[in-house]
Length: 319
Image (tube, rainbow, N blue to C red; front, side, top):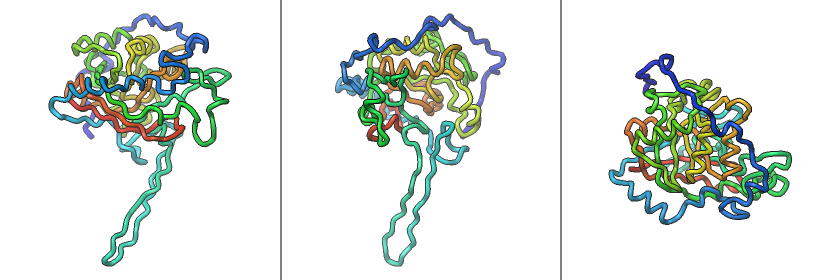
């Protein structure tokens, strides 16, 4: 992998702060957020934007056939991959013994948490709130939890997702290869990056945020895991009101870490519980950003893991 190159020293860059208009956000009571806009009992949330017209709109963006694979490699080697703290991925080869004039096969046993490792998508079973354990669309833990997967809100409900993807390159807006850890991406940052690219978000789009933080994967996993630049609650609220199919980023969690004062991963709660917007984490965006590929067809297919809280995925951008 290529070394990280900074055109300008981060220490010499001033990142302006702005008033956080959503600083007072808190989870609305069930009576205010349920049923969701997709209807009582809905389990798909923003995946409902997956429609024939959404797919056809995305196909019109494919002009050269250039494909960008946006997933990190899954490997137990920390020099090749990143695993969230406390999670595991182990692969054990089951080799065959060669036999004369015979065909034999090799296999492997993988022990892992396929819902929450590597480049992965979050299902709505991943997050709940309050003493009752209230999920998206007010499903309750007591009703849907089991030892063999969730009875509702599992990742199998999403299906294949394809839509117009838009790269929001905040790192490029700031003139750096990588934003500093803990930098709170604001609504102004998102809007200015889009304006610089001559892009506008449309309902059903996939918003892909480049922070540059993914450059650390396999190089400095400890730093990557400890902190990260990402969207704050104000930017998340603005994005949610653009009606995206997905919000994705090249960091762990999409949102800033550490969280803003008074919060603990609030964007996860806002997106997955309140609004029912799917999150996609740990993307590989260097090539996409270097190619200035701001608009493309975005395709991702979660594994059909019934009752799972998420899925490792291999998303692609095609233009």
